[in-house]
Length: 256
Image (cartoon, rainbow, N blue to C red; front, side, top):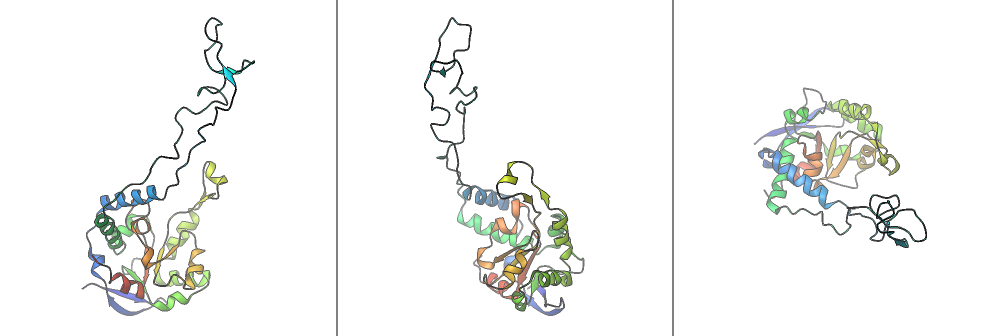
């Protein structure tokens, strides 16, 4: 059975533990991509205009013989409206709120995609190929002692990452933060932040949850809430992930 180093708060290797067999699963990027797309579609909120948008006018058409376009015009006026090619007219093919975006995925496919994405986080080659930055002497998967969950401040969390050797990726996310182009700036998503470290804990109420969330690109999740979309954002495998010792133990209880 494969073993992994367990890092302490000081960044030292304190022990070695056995890694669950889930980390030895074969990598299936095609299946992971399929499941991630399905998750994104199932979380999408349908939208669309009112059925009467652009149609709230008293209109008539002049008909033929006047040398003008035969479009709907304001009654007792000449301004064209309602037709899709006119200002204040309806849209030709608007998005429909009743459209069903959901995509169905088999339960076994969804389960195997999560395990496959999990196994990719234990490969330094996949993690580096995804663009993450870390020290070469670090062992994968990255496992830390449960005492780390008691860290409550952002500074101490960053110091932990620096001692382990993955703080370079936090700096990469900070330098890569850009102002989003387009209307998203007006809709509470002004900045686009690169994806960085995923911290998997066993207790979702641990003090480290608040401290780690303030770091750019860092996401902290309980082991029960991780899926293929969290482990492989955008369907790209090999996210830089840190697990607590107790989280590894819970992963060992997964049915494969």
